[in-house]
Image (cartoon, rainbow, N blue to C red; front, side, top):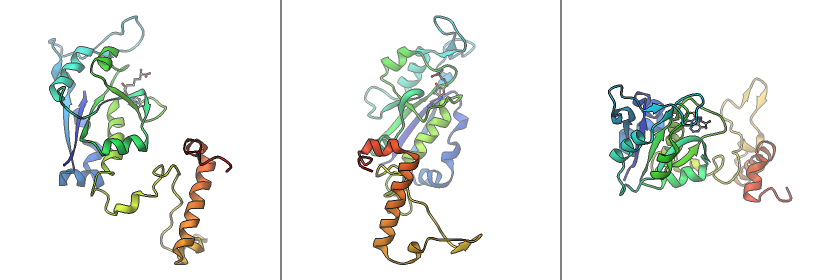
Length: 234
Ligand code: SAH
């Protein structure tokens, strides 16, 4: 079973982009995930092949037309398609590791990439698009955001990560940021690897990592502790 991604975009040449190489690229070559891009402009109906128009009510910019986006969606994911339909959007719910894990456990995703000022509200409602944001900043288009989402999902697919356990203590997986890492050489520019890590005492190493993870999280992301109630009394 593979994770099947369909991406609707005005810039299909931007794909697979970063997903064509390294971990995601190898997983794609193995068939762990598939990618279909759909050129939204192919569903334009006028001779200029236009996909956008001026905003109702006036103002700057252009808005992607509901009828064109809907036609592209209907042609690529029918009503029986079990995959969630996502719209990359700065107004969406934040993409979290929990949401990423949910998506990775499912059959795939149909992802609409916005451009201009975004898409006509009516197609969001009529096609039940879930708006997903990758952060509190504004990109020029949804393509990079879609690649961020897919990258995060693909590395969680079964068999994709070389060391299957390397994901367990990862940042966010247990509500904490991950502990610091070290590797050879044992001393570099006068800085030594913390003794505990070379002690061979696994219980102590675990305790040290846990302590570092909690300290980092407390300092940098107290919101994560609050979310898991870990912050109480800390
Ligand atoms: N006028 C919109 C921004 C449009 S940006 C607003 O103020 O909300 C153009 C497109 O880029 C969006 O339709 C969306 O698909 C994508 N995009 C921009 N920022 C994004 C973000 N933080 N997360 C996900 N997609 C984003």
